[in-house]
Length: 292
Image (cartoon, rainbow, N blue to C red; front, side, top):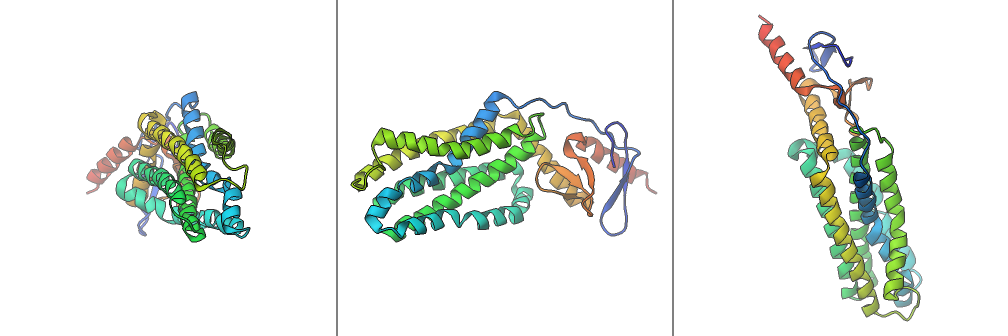
């Protein structure tokens, strides 16, 4: 293992992996600071936005039951919550592969844009046509986008936390935001007068959904602020890319979460926060040049 003050060199063990021993690689421990209040608030509001649209759809069940019957309750819940499992499996399986190709920052930004855009568009389209199948199809899209957003936010809060001493604050902010969306939907429902009566019309639903879409659009802007102006987010993305690069070049294995690097047997090897990546590469080149 590489310690925080020593150095090391590496050599191939014959099977494509690299054994690292203490000798030549310079390492340095990055000073970590607590996440700022602004960053915690941004993660909170992004978490709120990840669940806002599907909670708004479920809060309209009184209207949908009056229009399509009691069975609409079951169909809408299935349409919204069923995508959570396949999306989670797909993210666990393919996210690292995509991140290697386009870079972590670009990948997470794209997922966020797709998630927020799908949520807004699908919620706006629900009142445009009549039919339970139409509503369930769009609800499935809203559930899928919510799953994408929650997945990336929990992942980001995990490996961004390694850049700060607030290890649990960002995850807690995301979780609190996901829960707080119900209160926001209640406030919008009271403001628009929708959802309390079976006599609500399609016009009432349209007004309610449009207000939610405006709020969701504003929250998506906060996501861009988080991605564009948080130094810890940028640092965490660079460290994640560095760890993935080490996996590709030296046969190491990452856990895919907090940027920690492990050997093939899963034993912790180092954290990217403790690795001077440039020093590692420079010493590797020096070692290779010294070999006759």
